[in-house]
Image 1 (cartoon, helix red, strand yellow):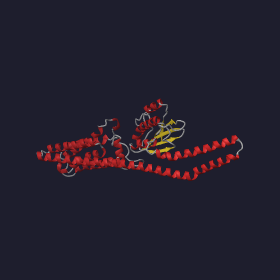
Image 2 (cartoon, rainbow, N blue to C red):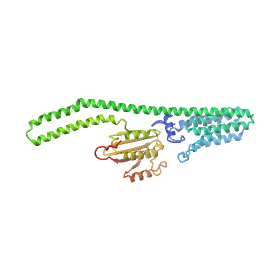
Image 3 (cartoon, helix red, strand yellow):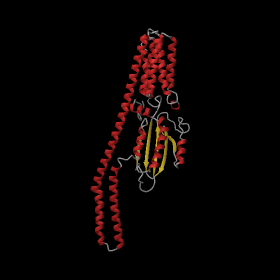
Image 4 (cartoon, rainbow, N blue to C red):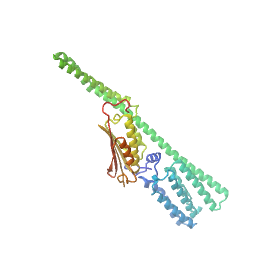
Length: 399
């Protein structure tokens, strides 16, 4: 499970996001909290062989120690460079350790239940098909134990059936619980979005009431006074200027009303802010996001899509090795995007920063006329680029 920003605790929501993004459970912050309980049980199980009746098969005890060491060393492998199916080898190796430990202690040693360790790990941190592989390995381990003990066929069949049923039950129940948590998170996100939309409607109504009772009325009254003063102005050029000012005041009132009540029509549209929030929601830990200025109306649709694609690539390079990621979008004369990844033991990314290479992203942005600034941040990496904002009113196809 992955900790939230600034936290080292166990967080179910983070691990679900990590699985949806295809991240390996054998790295990133919070690893000690995930591995610690399983490692403690494994060490206690190995140490228990020193208790009576002692080790039954010395060779099996040595094999169990070797396999347990292999499982521990597997956490140091560069999992992101390995095939997507490779992580299942760890719980399978752990199943082999449990088999060797059972053969070393014998059935009366009471260590047979350690075979559940790899199943519980895979059910909590792996995909369903990987849990199915571990269940099959556990069943195979029970067959080997039965054959080594010359157990009757009925006993072997009973063990296979019961362990297969128990393993399947644990795997299905755990994966079902994870799915329910994921659906609950999605429902919560939808409710939060609806709440944000209701807040926008409330703010629109409040602004409309305040402006209608103060600003708009004052502007309208000033226009009426100017119109009443026209008859007192003998010079034609002065009257024309006053009439032009009255027209400007009318335009100002109209623009104010459009700005206020235009919020309602934008509730059903998906602006750049919401698209950035949706993009970052799939990451773990979820980045801290800040907006400043009219971000939604800053860019036309094509430029917004290009910016989102660059942002997704930048987060994919920075987020995996960062304990905390932040995204800052500011709209002024240009739409500036700053992505920062920080965390313990972070080094500036680039050609040699944790294997992260930003040159393809910079080259692709350069072809579009955008320069990306890659540099170190406090304990991490910072990416920044700006997209020019077209002059004039937003076109009709803007989000």
